[in-house]
Length: 153
Image (cartoon, one colour):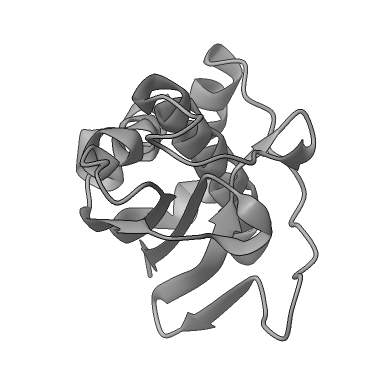
């Protein structure tokens, strides 16, 4: 099953690449690696504002991370022209806007990790990752994620 068939089965429509909010590019390719800049969580077209441990639950954070993964797939599509060119997702870095005592950043980030495995399959979608709790994310978003992907020759 192709990546696009899987997206259709999951009822996921790829969004267009968001316009950068500062002085950076949304993606950059060097060799067979594509680096995607951080994408913040959005809900119904607006920034998904909140802080884990204060006014966003772990389950809501996981949904926010999943939404970020959908946006990242849209950017990957723009960067590659064809998601079937992805050899594997190499690394995710997740920043979770959270209180000092919140310790479930890894569970929040599972929302993105699980979606990549669902869409790309376990071999291509499995990746190394980091999940950090931070005091704030741009625009007050609850989650920000960037990634590195490897393309097939």
